[in-house]
Length: 443
Image (tube, rainbow, N blue to C red):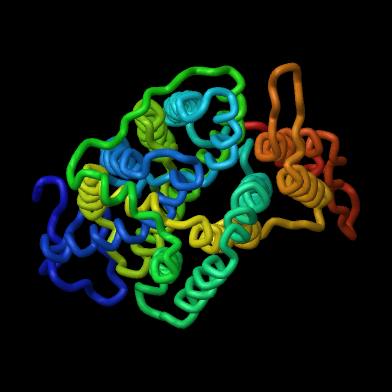
């Protein structure tokens, strides 16, 4: 272990203004506690996706743990991350199940992972400029925002009004905990709010424990193999791949900024690591994965970026995946509890898209940026669907394509910015006029 992670200081304390870097560690008792915090941080979102899509919870936990370990190996132990269930898969996977159930959706997840891995190979070989060109902040923010908004009508609203009283208790608990609790527990507001709603539902007698009582304490997850259906694959792959690219790249850049290291050369390997994690999940019945912003919050709070904490979290998730009774306890969460939780989660996804715009200083006085975001949001939120023969492309796919393709096309037709004139004359402006417009330059 010492050859991989060197001890930070005395291993017990962190100096003021210092951080524990990815290749460092604290003493094992502290690292075990940090690993447990990462499990708690990822847990709420990671189990919510299989609950909404009908996938086995234990299989999702099991493969997310294995995927996390593989991700950190692919990134040479330099990009600390947990690869948990991606919300970008919810709507496409739900739609894909109409063409062959869970196995058909798994086929789409597997192909998504393979495509992401291949893109990672190209980026690792040729650099990140192509991705930056295709996914500037206005496009990335639009895609993230429309995913959150697209999920409201098919996923959040029906569950909320299935048990509105329980949903409201869950929602209020999440909001109060998130605002009133200022320590680390405040970062777990969604998870703790679900616990409150779950307990409330159990008191009312609205929890069915039959499957919990029948489940074994220890056993392997229910592994499901994929079936490849062209319609299902086209529903899942196009939109989700673009979102995963944006999320992974943003994660690497955020960690690099927080640790004061240039991690951009590892962006391609991040794509490869998440691609392998998603491929394995699709191969054996888990949910597609992504790098988790929730765990960035934990690292920012603790100032510990050691990849050892994620190795511990990955092993813990694998062990949880081997507890069928635990999985059934999670699967028994009533729809009202989920409705209250996803009302917050989907809203947070939408606002995260806006946050990307703000932090990148996207100029919405520029008509290209304005109409790109406007059209993508309406198409995604309204779930515009294009039927082409036997294929149907839903709102997330159409909104994503509108953002990516629309931005590039509109940029091409946008008039070039005229060179500035000087009081002396045109002679000083001529060299500027010869400088190519950076908006026209391709990678």
